[in-house]
View: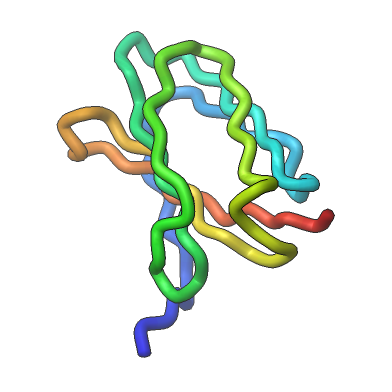
Length: 92
Protein backbone atom coordinates (compact mmCIF):
# COMPACT_ATOMS: atom_id res chain seq x y z
CA UNK A 1 0.00 0.00 0.00
CA UNK A 2 1.05 3.57 -0.61
CA UNK A 3 1.82 5.46 2.56
CA UNK A 4 2.74 9.08 2.95
CA UNK A 5 5.76 9.23 5.22
CA UNK A 6 6.75 12.85 4.81
CA UNK A 7 5.32 16.12 3.64
CA UNK A 8 7.37 18.37 1.37
CA UNK A 9 6.42 22.01 1.20
CA UNK A 10 7.06 24.22 -1.80
CA UNK A 11 6.41 27.91 -1.44
CA UNK A 12 3.41 29.14 -3.38
CA UNK A 13 3.70 32.70 -2.26
CA UNK A 14 2.20 33.72 1.04
CA UNK A 15 -0.49 31.17 1.97
CA UNK A 16 -1.90 30.78 5.48
CA UNK A 17 -4.05 27.82 6.53
CA UNK A 18 -5.71 28.04 9.93
CA UNK A 19 -6.83 26.87 12.42
CA UNK A 20 -4.88 23.65 12.42
CA UNK A 21 -6.02 21.44 14.05
CA UNK A 22 -9.67 22.35 13.52
CA UNK A 23 -13.12 20.80 13.75
CA UNK A 24 -13.21 20.47 9.95
CA UNK A 25 -13.44 24.05 8.70
CA UNK A 26 -10.24 25.77 7.59
CA UNK A 27 -9.50 29.27 6.35
CA UNK A 28 -7.10 29.63 3.43
CA UNK A 29 -5.66 33.12 3.07
CA UNK A 30 -3.39 33.98 0.15
CA UNK A 31 -1.96 36.86 -1.84
CA UNK A 32 -1.97 34.89 -5.11
CA UNK A 33 -3.52 36.77 -8.02
CA UNK A 34 -4.81 33.70 -9.86
CA UNK A 35 -7.27 31.01 -8.86
CA UNK A 36 -5.90 28.14 -6.80
CA UNK A 37 -7.00 24.52 -6.93
CA UNK A 38 -7.18 22.50 -3.70
CA UNK A 39 -7.45 18.82 -2.99
CA UNK A 40 -7.82 17.18 0.40
CA UNK A 41 -6.65 13.57 0.53
CA UNK A 42 -6.73 10.95 3.24
CA UNK A 43 -3.53 9.13 4.18
CA UNK A 44 -4.35 6.38 1.67
CA UNK A 45 -4.19 8.98 -1.13
CA UNK A 46 -7.93 9.05 -1.82
CA UNK A 47 -9.33 12.46 -2.77
CA UNK A 48 -11.89 13.62 -0.19
CA UNK A 49 -12.71 17.02 -1.66
CA UNK A 50 -11.61 19.19 -4.60
CA UNK A 51 -12.43 22.83 -5.12
CA UNK A 52 -11.20 26.02 -6.76
CA UNK A 53 -10.33 29.00 -4.59
CA UNK A 54 -11.30 32.21 -6.36
CA UNK A 55 -10.93 34.55 -3.38
CA UNK A 56 -7.87 35.62 -1.37
CA UNK A 57 -9.65 34.61 1.85
CA UNK A 58 -11.88 31.55 1.71
CA UNK A 59 -13.33 29.00 4.10
CA UNK A 60 -13.09 25.30 3.27
CA UNK A 61 -15.63 23.11 5.06
CA UNK A 62 -14.65 19.45 5.28
CA UNK A 63 -17.07 18.51 8.07
CA UNK A 64 -19.64 16.54 6.06
CA UNK A 65 -16.91 14.58 4.26
CA UNK A 66 -14.47 13.46 6.93
CA UNK A 67 -13.99 12.13 10.43
CA UNK A 68 -11.25 12.83 12.97
CA UNK A 69 -7.74 12.26 11.68
CA UNK A 70 -4.86 13.55 9.63
CA UNK A 71 -5.36 14.67 6.04
CA UNK A 72 -3.18 16.09 3.29
CA UNK A 73 -4.07 19.45 1.76
CA UNK A 74 -2.58 20.16 -1.67
CA UNK A 75 -2.84 23.63 -3.16
CA UNK A 76 -1.75 24.31 -6.73
CA UNK A 77 -2.05 26.92 -9.42
CA UNK A 78 -3.98 26.03 -12.53
CA UNK A 79 -0.78 25.03 -14.35
CA UNK A 80 -0.04 22.50 -11.55
CA UNK A 81 3.65 23.45 -11.53
CA UNK A 82 3.70 25.05 -8.07
CA UNK A 83 2.22 22.86 -5.37
CA UNK A 84 2.01 23.41 -1.62
CA UNK A 85 1.39 20.29 0.46
CA UNK A 86 0.37 20.62 4.09
CA UNK A 87 -0.78 18.22 6.80
CA UNK A 88 -4.09 19.22 8.38
CA UNK A 89 -5.64 17.69 11.46
CA UNK A 90 -9.37 17.32 12.10
CA UNK A 91 -10.49 16.87 15.69
CA UNK A 92 -14.28 17.25 16.02
